[in-house]
Amino acid sequence: MNNGHLSFARIEKHYGAQQVLSIGTLRLIPGRIVHLTGRNGAGKTTLLKILAGLEAPDGCGDRCEVTLDGHSRPWQAVRQRLHREVVYLHQHAYMFDDSVVNNLSYGLRVTGVPRAERRRRVAEALARMGLEYAARRNARTLSGGEQQRLALARAWVLQPRVLLLDEPTANMDSDFRRQTWTLLRSVLGEDLVLMVSSHELSDTDCPDCLNLHLHNGRLNAEQPALRLVGDDWAQTAQLIGAGL
Image 1 (cartoon, helix red, strand yellow):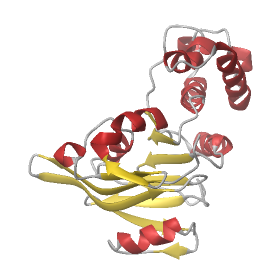
Image 2 (tube, helix red, strand yellow):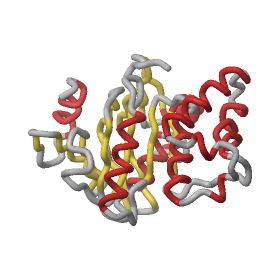
Image 3 (tube, helix red, strand yellow):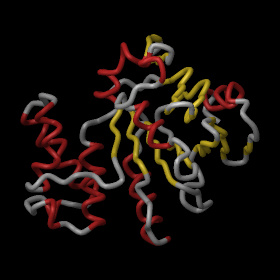
């Protein structure tokens, strides 16, 4: 996995006459957890899908510029690479009617990862998520919490550059939400960007996260010991790039 930064410029999205997104610059730095908040309908899911190459921004992606490892190209030109390097995980991930091991190895088989490497990655994912005991069980028989861990493991095992989680803590009580954030921090490595969306942020969920709030199509940033108010995203982008 390459540990260079990934940035997006001029993310615009309209549905009819309604503008959903108008973001000047979004830079994602490896080794960081980004917590994206915003009300229902604010455009969080749309933004995540654009970052993952699943939904085109305005102009079929030609106006949006993506910088990967120092090279800038239109979103449309790098869409397939985004598919490979950015993994989007829906709140209710689909479980194949098969064993936990086969659910984990499916994406690796499809992308042509050799068998020995598949086995190594699957074993590591099972251990990291505490699912070794369920390796041969049918994934659809797991509890909700176990399925959540499996979904996260299935995404993590692909070794993406960016892992996007859409509302993973929705409808959870405080204890389960805290456990989930602990699990998310455990999968973060120096080469991975973890971006997590939710309706609201509790100060105890992830005090070391970079907190971005989506409102009226624009991003505002709040960081530990630093609060920015308004839409001066150019200033915010510089702070994020500096790793503050």
